[in-house]
Image (cartoon, rainbow, N blue to C red; front, side, top):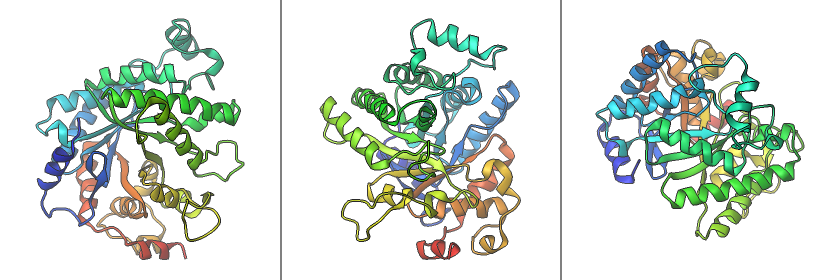
Length: 367
């Protein structure tokens, strides 16, 4: 498991190789502001081998945040992360490992009949109540998350997952009443508080796509203060002083900057201003750590950025400037970059040798 001492020791290995704010606070210690994502790629042995090489290179060169999910590449991404952690010379206590649960995963490959597979593997054994299954593959019920968390621990071959995300909870809002979804999340938060107390996870979070980027009233909108209230209630029920909801994951890049530009959340308690604020501002006020996904727009921004924005960003390549845009946003801890290709690791890691934009310079981009 990651520890405060272990992550700081990892940071100290690199001395002054990176910019002054490359490593940032993330429970329990520090994490690199460039993280490795494992979403991309087909579920094949060849891609597995590429990920092993890429993850090894990343850990050896300054990336200690590895992000995955049980459904990525039919559980193969989690298993590759686990295999690589077993083989690396980097101390486990210096590496922050995050995964997610919510989408029911296939096993190794996509089955010929996905619906039948879900029914036989999850519904008929009683793991999932079909009444809570949305779009045929998504559930955030406490019992389901409990099952998926156990499977993730086995896939990763870990005793503890440092950050466990409920994956795209807003998917439930496509078919269910919002109040029922908040109730389900509170029950799942209770489960995660118990798993945290047992030492199975370090903290938990919400990995989203639409939830915090859309306006209140939109179908998939979630209220961050309501979620924090539910986490507080869950912690009180379990009997712990402080809840473990400490992280948000959401998409953020030059073309998807809603988390910064769109005021979707109410003003935080004790805020100077009245009226709504962005989710980044609210998360910062609430002490939450924000991890961005889609930092390169699944590769599209690696070769092309708006010229006016690119001119403001440090970096030798377009990809480095795009990564620095994501990690420059106020309140962002880590910008995730998909690195299924070992050839891209060195370029992405090198983005951390450039200082990110200051808050005022970042604001100026949007003026």
